[in-house]
Image 1 (cartoon, rainbow, N blue to C red):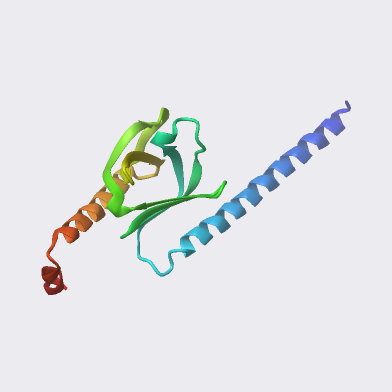
Image 2 (image 1 turned 45 degrees about the horizontal axis):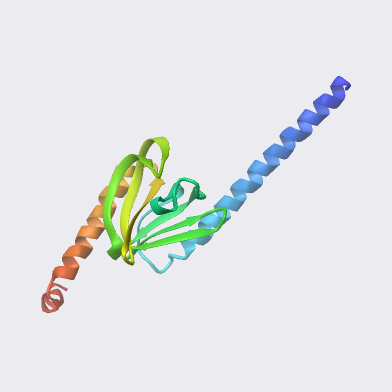
Length: 163
């Protein structure tokens, strides 16, 4: 092959690769905006775009994992994966424990992961994400869960007086 032809081939591949990256970033930005807009009428306590989902423990190590948007409201922990579209909704009343760990379902990223133990019907399970600030997410989730725990234990008449 002639050197000029090889140069044109590499240039074309580089331009194609750059175009694919730009289009993927535009798509991710659009998907993230769509996901966050679902919560326009809800107070968001914490959120992160680009959370890496490591799966649900009971489904084993071979399940699909990927990135998406993780949102915490006063009622639920919501995650939606960018590709493929996959939604996980955990009502905070189902959350039993929040922890930080380095492994989950046989997978490790070499950094701390946010692990959430929850009750699904009669089965207890664990889900995990890689987020930028695990300590922040752990603290906020524990605070919200503790507040909800206290609220459910207060007598209804006392709630009315506290408002």
